[in-house]
Image (cartoon, rainbow, N blue to C red; front, side):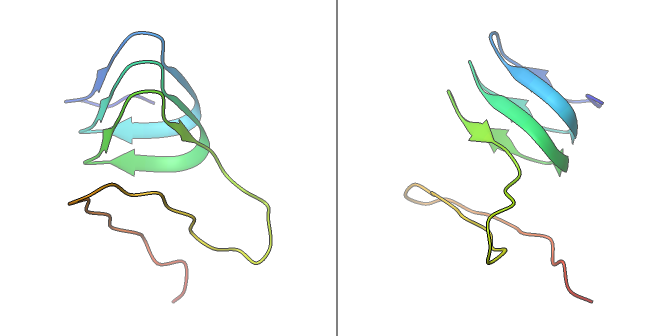
Length: 74
């Protein structure tokens, strides 16, 4: 699902994901990660699920980045 107010640049692959109110720049791949919203995804980025243990968020963030992560605990 690609929702409103979303721009997907050329060469991108989106599979088994929902994205809305977001921008995905050139040649990026998003696979099987559920819903993404209000986001900016840079060039040649790969977003994918992991089955590695321990389960954790693994991030590479540049200077002045901001990230909001949905809690998986109640």
